[in-house]
Image 1 (cartoon, one colour):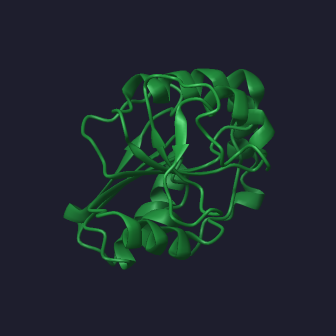
Image 2 (cartoon, one colour; image 1 turned 90 degrees about the horizontal axis):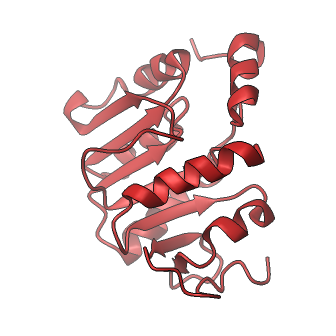
Image 3 (tube, one colour; image 1 turned 180 degrees about the vertical axis):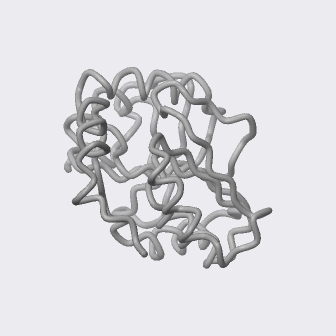
Length: 187
């Protein structure tokens, strides 16, 4: 049985309080991961705000050896584990944590984010935490629902890193450079 987020009012209300989305789709996760693998050697991925495990499922199905995720809600983690039960458990781990404060214990080849935080007051703590632990030149697929909300927080740290001008894959740089990210200029 699939998790029914529409009828989970408690989780939906907590999501709204945290500034997160109760449910978002993966858009073209398969295409995003295929493009990343075409351009870079991707052996591990971390999905921030992994929800029910859709991105992790796509990553493991695309033969990415390690696909880990972070999720706040136990009900989402349970649903993700059900989604991933067809894979060897040594290939994935789902951490329970608040992505505004959680930090990984290891480095990943790729971090996947589908606009995990929607409320302005929650976005800055999330991105401050993220930039505190990201290593220089970390690859990130970042899909933003509203780029204008994020542009000022990230534009000078994220450099477009794909041969495809429409593909939202970036390299993170600890040192900010004005107008580094041309990807968001005309969006």
